[in-house]
Length: 113
Image (cartoon, rainbow, N blue to C red):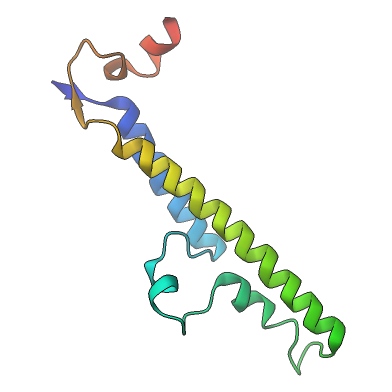
């Protein structure tokens, strides 16, 4: 048995994607948003600065804040779905595989076929 190189690559990709999401301020795959209604989504966090007494207020500010919240939460969902897809693929693969398996030499052997 040998390590599954494809799974290892997906593990690194998952870690990188998760780290970048955190750096951008996105709460991808955070169970707290579903369980704790007092936790603000990224869209709520950023849009709250638009309709604020120290920046800008009024009906247009309300509309802009709502649009911003919707757009940022949509991007957050896309990044979360991407991380879910990476993790689902990673978790579908065995950690250790037979040395005759093409994933034991991935990506080299799978590209030659």
